[in-house]
Image 1 (cartoon, rainbow, N blue to C red):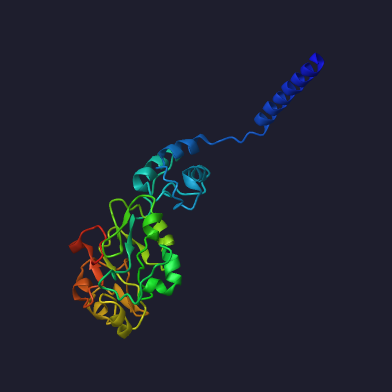
Image 2: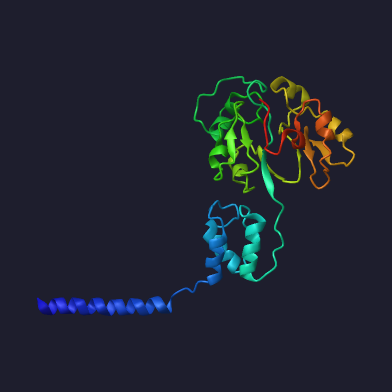
Length: 272
């Protein structure tokens, strides 16, 4: 009995030594810069950078596989700290962007042909006669984008449309991916004008389904002195490289679907 116990103890000790040697021999050396970068990153683990969480991004930056400004959530301040760790010059990264809803057809504005009582999920509602909404391009208002936002930057307004809090929005783009109709988009922070509609239906059909839909009248095109807005596929589209935020297109739009945030405030709002 004693011999058996001594034998087992000896084997245990031998295996422990072997495991210790193997651990040292096959250990993967960690770049200390990756650990420092991980401490600097916000820890949101949102995946907007394209890497599996903040730790994955930290390792990628340390290996030179990702730029120091890859974290959209941290923005320029975090990029500068990471650049200091990496011993490089921060380039400032991309311009901050803010999410906007390309629809203004809330309750009392857009025609509702049927009452949807299915799963409270935008994808499900979209597959089932667009949630009963007459405009098949419009927001069904079941909040997939709101639930997807990890920063609490989205909420549903009384009119059934999501509202973006520009102060909380990090431009991560998660809400863009969450919307089955592609109604969320990211717009440069400096840009104050956007088109709150995505309908590609002919103007006559739009008038029958929504009071604030784009009717492709092209008045905005004719008004703009900078060639920054054009109607393509029955919907106005702004070229933000040319737009000067003059707001004349919003002023002249007969449907009032072009929003000028210089008048409404920086928080993206929807008509009630």
